[in-house]
Length: 107
Image 1 (tube, rainbow, N blue to C red):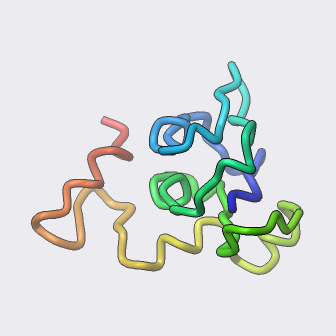
Image 2 (image 1 turned 180 degrees about the vertical axis):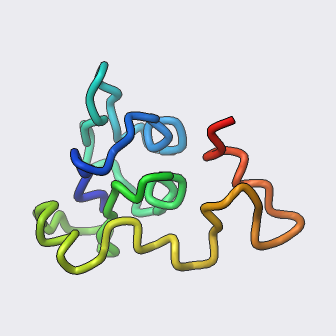
């Protein structure tokens, strides 16, 4: 379940708002998005995967809100940690068939 949107890391791109299939986030003008409907999160990790700033933390438990805070998540190196499944941050992809990098490109 989505737990943290880091105010210090967020670059206000709203990629998380765009990619969330459950419309969990709400965009806020000139501020990081807020978790508006946390109970609707399906723990798909799409927001965390597409966040170019690693400003999100999705807890792996879909059933329970853990109420972790940003400081604890950052101290444990968990912000953006789901990206470790092989998704690339660079302007390229891990696989020739993978075009997902285009969603986070800044160009």
